Amino acid sequence: MEKFAPVKRSEDGEPVRYLIVDDSVFARKNLARMVETFGGQVVGEAGDGISAISEYERLTPDIVLMDITMPQMEGIEAAEKIVREHPSARIVMVSSVGYQENIVAALQRGARHFVQKPVKPEVLYEVIKYVMRDDGTTARGAGAGA
Amino acid sequence: MRMDLIQPFINSADAVLAQGLESPISIENLSMEEEAYRRKGIAAEVCFTGEIEGRIIFDADLGPAVQLATLLAGVEVSETDDLVSEAVCELANQIIGNAITSLNDQGFHFHVRPPTLHTSEQGSKSSEDTEALVMCFNTSSGNVFMNVALRYRRRRALERAAVVG
Image (cartoon, rainbow over all chains, first blue to last red; front, side, top):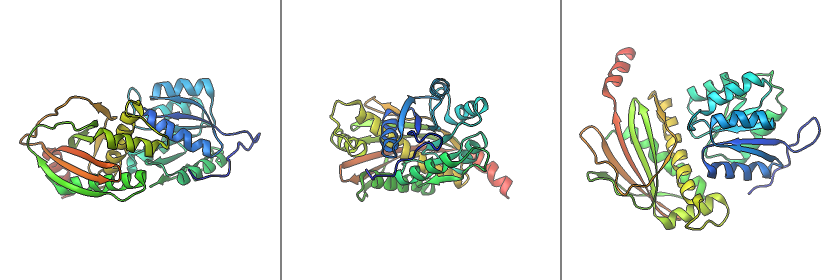
C-alpha cells in the first residue's frame, strides 16, 4: 500500500484517533489498514449507528469514518445524533451509495465530507487532511471519491 | 428486462472489480434465467425497495472467492476464514451501491438494504413481472456471477411521467 506523510493533530502533534463504523468487518479492516498508513490510530470500531453513538461518547475520537447503509440505525441518523451532542465532531461518510440526495442529506445533518466506496487511499487521505484542518465553522466539504 | 436498468450494474461491476483486483474484467456471459436460482459458491444478496424493487445476488465459487478476499484484504486468507464471506458481501455492497447511485442520479428512487449472506442452495424463480438476468464476469481470480431480479413499478413511473409531462 502507498506510503503517506503522517497526518497529526495540530494541537499536540499526536496521531489522529479514528472510530470506524461499518457493518462489514471486511470494510472496517480495510479502512483501518488505510488510516494506519496515514499515521492514524484506530481507537474503536462499531457495526451499526447505535453502537457508533455510544462508542463516540466513550472514546471521543478525532474522526469518525461512518458507513450509511447499516442495520438498526443508519449512518446519516447516527451522524446527526452525534453532531447534535458534539458540534465539533468530525464525521466523514464512507459509502458505496453516493447519489446526490444522500450526500446532501449527510452534509446537512453534520457530516464534514463524503467518500464513495470503493475507497481510494489517496482520496481518503486528502479528505482526512482537509477535515483535520476544518474547524467546523467553515462551509462543509463537497462529496469526493471515485 | 430494460437494459437501461441493467447497464449501471454491468458498469459498476466492471469498475469495482477492476479497481479491487487491479486487472481488467470481461463479461463472459449474459443470459435470462428461467429456472430457480442455484447458488454456485459464496453468495451475498442485496434487496432494495422503491421505484425499482428486487434483489441481486453476487456469487463466486469458493476458489475465486478466497482469491478475491486475499487480494482485497492484502493478507493471505484461508477457505475457512470468515473474511471470505465478508469480502463477497462487501464487494456486492460496493457494486450494487455504485449502480444504485447511478440509477438514483437518473431519477429512479429506491432504498437499499445491507447485504446478507445467501446460504440457501436455491433462490426464487423468475415470474411474470420479475425477470432474472445472470451475468458472468471473468476476473483474474476466476468467474464471478451476478443474478439480477428486478421489478419496475409501472404505476410510479407513470406518475413521474405525468409530472414531467
